[in-house]
Length: 149
Image (cartoon, rainbow, N blue to C red):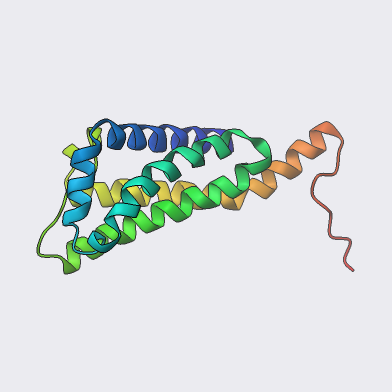
């Protein structure tokens, strides 16, 4: 299950980053129009795709996978929060997403993001169980057992 969720996040983030980078000027322009992020747009226009490309790299490196799952979950919570803030408090709704996400309504996009938030939470919660089962299969103790002390 961890590998499937990681693969879904990898596909999502690589696709989103590539879409933004392919139409970088549109992404920059729309981000600059954001009533929430306009002051930070010059930084966010570089930071968002960079993070969206860094997380997939960390997801494929077993040593960093758990951290990357937390980062994936956190980023999706931030994106979802941004959508809620735009929908509730903004008179102008910018569209800085690319690809298929651009064709979604904001409500659909929010539901899509919440689905990934749930997947991220599931992965974080089951990850320690996955490590314990892998260590049992391999005969190694990767996670210290609680001996009641």
